[in-house]
Length: 481
Image 1: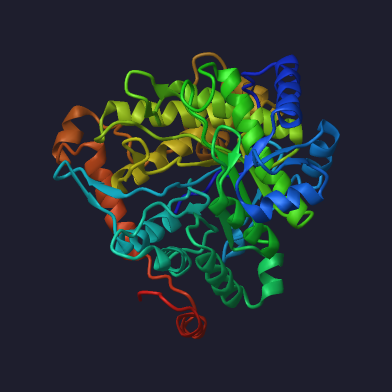
Image 2: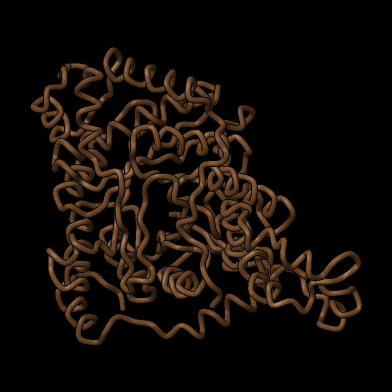
């Protein structure tokens, strides 16, 4: 495995000026104060009311003054450590440090050798977990697919167990049932060693979404409360779509996204002050001819880059969305769409870019070969974020003086010292002559990626320690082993 670039400091790209950030913030506070949010969870509604929100029981609206809203937002930690089962995979979200990971939850698997897709199953989650565990530029495993063969009551425990039993990286996932949340937390406590150990080193995190525009539904409102009570890190993303569930303008979309996500963050702090809550965006544009969600638009990159700046303004860790494509196959569109949105998010300092590997076709489909290809793209993205180091060593004046006019630097110790850190060395990009490429079988990028994926999955024999695994299977019901 190559060295991973992670936690690199971004923020050099700023699509929003300081004045623009302030205007968005003022509009957000005005909406929270004057319009409010519809809260359909009875528990959440009563919690907002007790916390001092102005509550309208008939309209199910809660409104908070800007002062109260900021008081709650400031209770949330500005940094959150997400831990792997091995400490080398720990990441710290906050500031403008950049990490990337997978996303979900896709229903299908695309197989480029047949150019067909099929329904995803539990075996795919296990294999994808093994694959992500081996890919150095994917820093966090968000459970990517849905096990279509299982009843919903078994989905949460099986998805998280598949991740925890096949990868040592941090496991993040969306959740579907309250009982599933409780069982997954109990599972993670067993693996971590105790409830206290899990809070000290959270090896899992969970996602509960707001509904744009400005609505917290009953089911996910209840899940936010349940997760916040547990103390497990919680992601509060929103998914406003330009021209559909938000104004068509990017600034208007950013306003809705910020309001919606902050409502989740504030609810978590009301439930359990200091809850590790992550401000999040899945915001994007809409194809207004069909009203389809778009995953590969440049506007998604712009909106999520702006979201990173808003998160930095509120001093909250940020869960961004980038790196996807609307393409149905592994073609040029798949590459350029994934690269552009991922790069914009990273350069803006988005803390965790989710959906950054493997996803295609409006986020409905995952592809093993694309997962490997996106790992390569992310390596280049992280190198771009790292920027150009300028100091006496890299300026190399003494070396240039020594070599002199007309010389070369091939054999210099300086070249050997910096060649790997200064230049990203790809695994997939073809840099051979045409003759050498032909002699090696004329392989397309996706074919090489498929070979790498199969080898990495086969090489990964990780599973939970036997005693821990046995206890999990005995205590947690519904796991399909």
